[in-house]
Length: 141
Length: 105
Image (cartoon, rainbow over all chains, first blue to last red; front, side):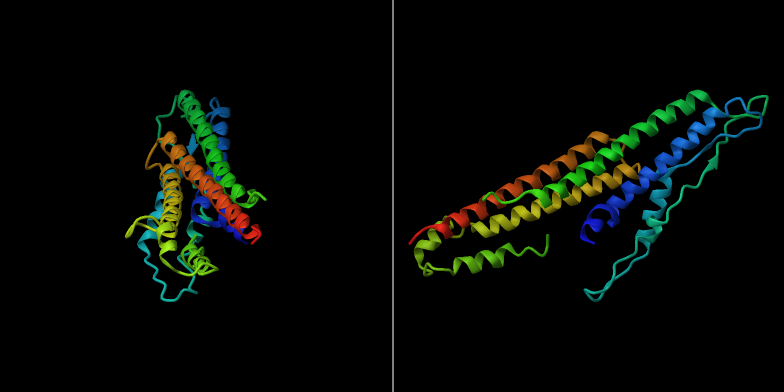
């Protein structure tokens, strides 16, 4: 469907959608870290969306797909479409109880994550409103 | 955007009614100057480029290549505004065309 392609399955909307997926997952992860700041032997986890996205886009660029017919499909976005957050453990030094959550850092990350989430939503809405204007604006009779 | 062939459509319109004499050439402006359809096609291309730029800006922002939220927002807003302006210009053109078509001869 055209609307679907414009809003959700083209590359940029897909990047935005994945970004929101990752940021909501990260929000959950950071909240878990903060919630477990006193749990013995708990290790803080995080995900890096930018890094993962860069990897996918770069690997997509390395694979050169040439179309010799206008009916050919382009390079697939599957790498991006099935991108999943891969959490990693933070290497920060642990306290005496084996817990390495740094509350100040986590709070900072949480605030940053929230700002990014809002920014992505704003960008998505702006793109949507452009399409909406094309759909609803009629020539004046 | 590629599918809209303003050029061919406008040329087709030019053939209607008025015989192709020197008077119609004068409407296009000075000799050798860009014609109306050229200007329009060029503007549409520019709007399309702006939208591509905005998409690139969004991608750069998402991959962390740039940390500037404002630049991304400016690019997207620029593309949106340019598109809306194009819409309104198109509306005016269609309106003018309909006005001419309604004229009693």
